[in-house]
Image (cartoon, rainbow, N blue to C red):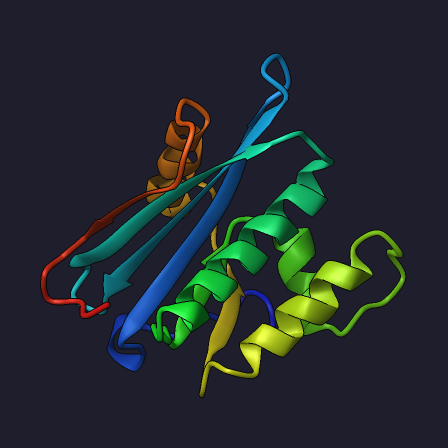
Length: 156
C-alpha cells in the first residue's frame, strides 16, 4: 500500500476501484457505491448497495470499503488501485493506527481483504475526484436491493 496522498499515475494501474458511502438520516438508510475504471478512464463496472440503519460517517466509509473489497474478491476482480475520499480512514489503514476501538474490527477485516489484492495501492482522493462513486452511493439510498451495471469487457 502506498502512503496516504500518493496515488499511482494513470499509466501505473490497470483498474482503479472508487468507493464511497452516503446516508439519509430521515430514512435511517445508508448507500454504498463503487465504480471500477480502467487506466484509460473507461467505466468497467458500477455497483450500488442500499443498507438499513445508519452509523457514524467514518464507520460508514469503512463499511463501504469493506463491502467493495469483499464484493470484488467474491467475483475475482482485483483492481490494483483503490481510492476513497475519506482521508481519516485511508490514513488510519495506511499508518497501521489502532486507537479507534469502533473502527479496529473493520480495519482488521479490510487489511485481511487487501492481502488478496496483489500490488494494490490504497490512497486518498478528493471528493470532487470521487464524484462517480459518491453519486452511486446517493443512488443506492433510493433502492431496495443491490444493482450492478457492467461493461461487457469486464468478465464476471
